[in-house]
Length: 493
Image (cartoon, rainbow, N blue to C red; front, side, top):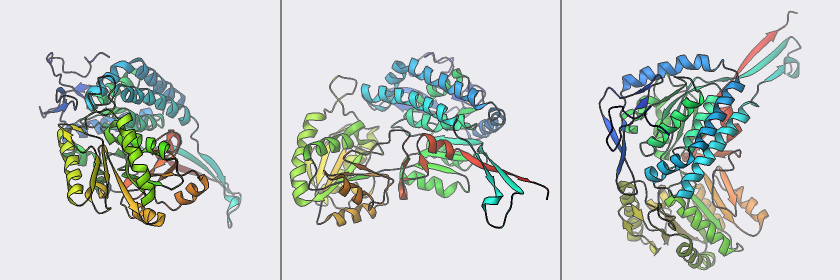
């Protein structure tokens, strides 16, 4: 994809300096400041992004408001056509975008390619489903005390300007999951990409523009969360915030933004309960994949496993064996490696610190545990207590902890006492028992005999407690990005 639109024209050196899109043009910030985007693969600076100023944000949001008034009046079928063209552009540039993702966030070829293609499919699904989001009509005669003189025409209308904040681990897919539904429902978007993932996100912005999204309808501003995050979230021109990130940041945003709609997906810290009758080999495979895919940097990763002592004693050696067989740590650009680095040196150091703290508090490192620059070995711990930081706070890395409990009721109590509540897994050969147990677990979704996962994308996806607010999924997200507007007809009596 040509970069001349968003790379500074005078910048012919490496690494390039990327512009931001202010709703009118690709621009360099008046601050004159940039932020380095550093590859976790080799610490190489891939590019520099703009640190935009608050005044530039003000101007961009104003453009988004003006553009939205025109965009909402464009027939939805026309908006859908533009989104379908955007999905075609994503597929057309899949190889280029995949290559950027690998360098920018350290995914394997398979993981990066899957994210790009899944994102294209998601845009299409949002465009198609948007055509079926409709209002309704209600008659007053259906409620006691009223008669046939009242009739309500209940429309679904756009919210206005939606702030979309995406995370580093899925910078294309989780951006698309916010931008596409907002656009199809007639909203404009102020898009705040993650620093790690910003280059991919800038390309995504240009794809939507090339597909025909008018200027101002999408605005992309770059900068660190500490520099512009609070200003964006609390801006009077923002009508909704949709955010994916940590529970701690999500809670901070929610406390500040006031009375506007929010749709948040926050930390997971997901548990798995293994019942004695579970197939230990298939369970072990799901645990290994669930814990170590993309180096555990997923809100849907398995973080701890609970079971009775005989169950854990039987399961743990199999998990270690499957980890050795299935997980190969190394540069994901090289064939055969499927566990790459975590996103930064600071992240690696924090993960190692928590592992060592758990060990000092009595946990045992059964496998792995070593840090090598940005690489953390796939790590398996046992003897972990719920009070330990590695379990109490989501550890965004390739670490899974095993906990022996005296009863399944104790396991449920540990899970329900957590501040997190995204997903949980139950492994058992008795689906009836699995369903009964799932009904006792306070999380958004319970998976029976599978690792936690977001898809299929038309399923409802939600967290409770510190793991999120609102429901995502194709139809549910579209509804969340609209509001009801009743128009009541009163017939003369």
